[in-house]
Image 1 (cartoon, rainbow, N blue to C red):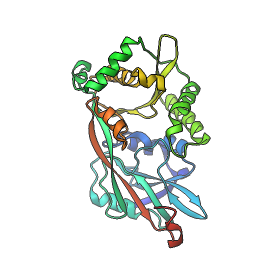
Image 2: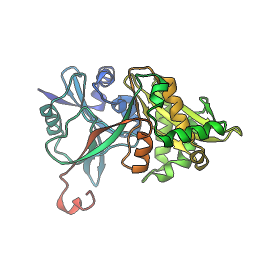
Image 3: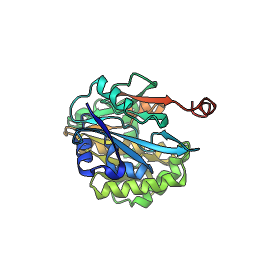
Amino acid sequence: MQIKLERREEIDDKRWNGCVHFALGAPPYAYTWFLDNVCEEWFGLVVGNYKIVMPVVIGKKFGIQYNYQPFFTQQLGVYAEAPLSQETIDAFFAAIPKEIKYMDMALNESNFAPQFGEVTERHNFLLDLNDNHEKIQKRYSGNVLRKIKKAEKAGLYVNKQLSPEMFADFYRKHTATKIKDFKDKHYYMILRLVYKAIHYNMGFIIGVQNQEGELLAANFLLNHPQRLINLLPASSENGNQVGAMAYLIDHLISTNANQYKFFDFEGSMIPGVANFYKGFGANKFNFYQVKVNLLPKFLRIFKR
């Protein structure tokens, strides 16, 4: 198997995105337009006529190249329409140039863990939507059902007319403050992602308001043929008190039921958030985060 490296300007977007679009069990974070908006530089490793691809995001500090996992990008790794072998995953990692001295990459759920580096198992939660809403709702936990009833009693309603700016402002106010290293550039990154996804008909904004018109919860979701991705959920304190996010997710499940796709909660390693997602009857799926540290010894202390 010959793996070639293609710089961003060399990549055939149509063929690359075709591979990502039809990749087996892989989320859509590796579309060229998505990567172009969440990082400044990346290249691709490619087999054949884009039969198998792997994006590698890179940065540079003190003259040293490194790989990192961009904001709002839960999983990357190797993408292919056919099942991947352990040997293929290992070959792709071996093909990453040695000039990249540090790697921190989360692989998608179809990837085996490579046979080197520091590997950590991470969790995602997926809900199969191939059933009617009533049957899916019967698998909700008592806590989730109570939140939904509280929201209904409060007269909350769904709003699908939020502007990208209104959504991004709400996210920055109520969620970004809890995210380590969130900066202004990430606010503008959200706006670019939202506008691009809507342009490609691959995403939408949705919110929940009370009878006074106050926005209590909002979300931006990626809409992929295989999954509906809970990309940017945000809820205010008032929204938390009346179950606005549970109400919003239940609405999304209701309007997307009876489809051959998953509601992808994007997982969480935070127990409270994980339990909330599991409360909708979602199943846990594992994926791997890989770290490789080839930095000079005097720099390794800064990247543990």
